[in-house]
Length: 161
Image (cartoon, helix red, strand yellow):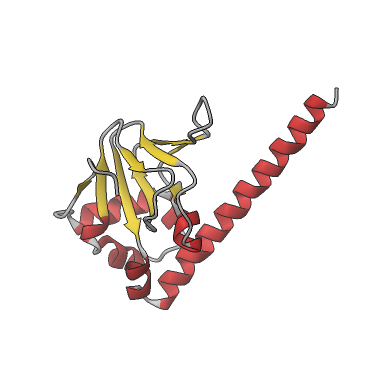
């Protein structure tokens, strides 16, 4: 967790459910499931602009779903952000799933509210909620892979001209 991120301990469950209802990542969850997730008060964080949420090379293994705000994905060797993520997007899943070091840094570009999921939290969730979280991660990772493949094809076409 970034040093200057603040845990939002006193999140109103109704307000939390309202936010979850607006974030596309949670569309496949039922209202009772969203209520359960909304009850994980200690997993809500706020990051102010410039906050380094994840440090490239770090070993923490949580992943985060963006509820409000915006973050940039940065790599030490790149001159510009690799991506900008918005509400409904998530990050940190590679380390979460593989127990590997962080491959990029994540910086808050705006005031951002995040929902953190770590392995302990995942184990404590019911099987249907765990499966929906995993299904969403897989679905979005496949979409990202398809987009990267299309980008590689575009780049190959440009360089072959």
